[in-house]
Image (cartoon, rainbow, N blue to C red):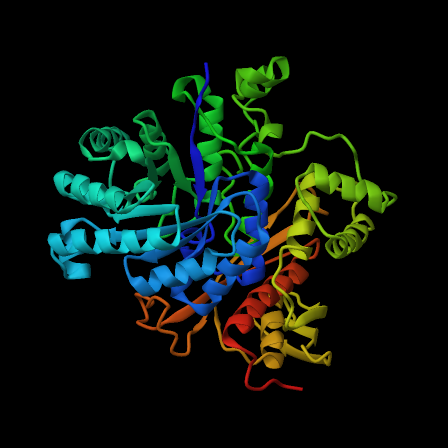
Length: 528
């Protein structure tokens, strides 16, 4: 039988970026958008153009340079927001404006300070205005799952009459359950005037851990677009994860009776890219893309897998982009074999990126006899998926021990090409490295998270370090207030990988600092 098509609306670059510490610069957003196009999502929500000039610029670049998916910009039901969204997406091959307004009584009364009648009129006016600019308009009644149903149907009917072509039903605070949500979608189909003219979409948050389940229940009830993010990123506990949605619909196709256009072999490369750019690690037991997703330790499971894989695996790892290629790379491997292996793993590098990654590969191959796929992922993440260097780490040298004072010397190259060397001591070698870097780069910040893990087994394993730093926002009113300190702060993540964990730590810190400098500007002074 012919299956219905479910559209995949990816909001990694908008809602996903709202994860604390997941701030992306324009170049990083563009690279992720290109990867999403390779994943073949139907819609890319590229950002919220009215939120900042930087977001507008990023949306404009994505609209101009990424082909394939519809490029969407988010806007409140405010004329200036809609103008900014249109300015952002107008250069796209296919455009969509996504407008929203809250419809739950708690939001209408306490946030909007409006009446229901005013919400209806604003919806009619702003959806109509968006439609005058763009033929493809999506409308979202924010906090739909806590809205009074009769009023929700009325608002949706007004949006359709004003020109909305997609109606998105958000579970904004992750409040609903699969059974309730499916019933709501069916009721919307039954009671909303003009519903046959629009596609029903869903956008589920994961506060109670049910975002994916709620989204899939909605599909069974007739929804034909799912809004989701790579790795389930997003506000608070995040959103439905695109990799979980994709593989659930594919693995249980007969049950759901629908299909997507996704190229599932790009799921793992997408996950890795987003994790590295945002600095937010994927938990080992994360479905589909976690390190343990296709690992088996129990003896009974291992025995079953060896006899027949489907005894304990419902998916083939190669379906999500994990390689089963037996080509072994080592110190004698050439550039062609290296490049071919990366392509098979889903990495599409330009010549300059390939050259940098190959140089790191050769350096690692002198230390390790066999280079695994996980080692290659770490190399690409650390060498390619990094912010543009403002300051570049050239050298680290440390002295430490249980009876010694931990001391570090670092050498950095500044934006003017000048090389600066300085040293410091600390409570440990990593602390000493960070303090030495701080003596050169005068950017006050606080290290709030530090994590380290081995990429593979063995004493010669590559180590990956992920950190997060917090810094004063200098009056940027667009940022949220830290609930504990009452201050507006920047939060940036950094990533580094090396067989020497001290070097990896230094690279991670420089990654976070370069992001901070790119947003806040050059430090006022630095030690020479």
